[in-house]
Amino acid sequence: MHAEVTVALSQEDDRLEIPWQSDDGALQYFDLRRHPESIFSVEEANGEPALLDLLLYLNGERSILQSAKCDTWLSNEMDVEDEFFGAIWKRGSYVDVVLADAEKQADQQFHLFFAEALTGLLKGAPEIPAAAELVLRACHFHEDQVDGFALTIYLLGYGDDPDEAQQRWVIGLQLIQAALEQLSVA
Image (tube, rainbow, N blue to C red):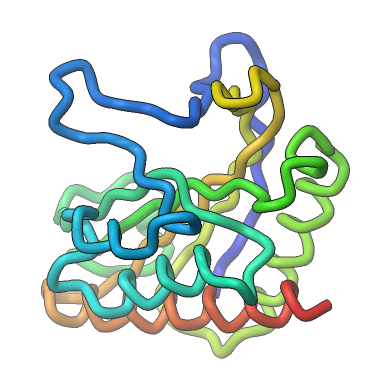
């Protein structure tokens, strides 16, 4: 699996805020660690067992992370970076995560170390037509009025049809979860 880390900490880069809510109020943050029953309110996870499993893991007791936001998509519009995979379709997602330990949420070096370790594990995974990008970004935690950091985990699975792209995306999510489990134990 192709995997890389990107740092997006300039003033122009997007910043995560927790909790968050869309302008129209239709979408919002759910604290799945404190309220796991809210998982059924995360529309993106409905009908996507692999994403549901990842979110349940991320917000469970064994994880050092918790999720803040996610989305999924399917597209046949390819960018220059996608050409390497020689596919027609891509299934994508992102999951914004923060450290569950509030004391470490402002530790930029730990976030970078964690992102590099995760990409290292993903690069060592079996080669499949999938790509992961971990983006280190700023995050404002409204509850504590503290600035810190978050990671956005992007994943793209590629295929010659939507089903093949979906299958490779699911495998990629499973590989990410396995790598996260290894890092959380360490």
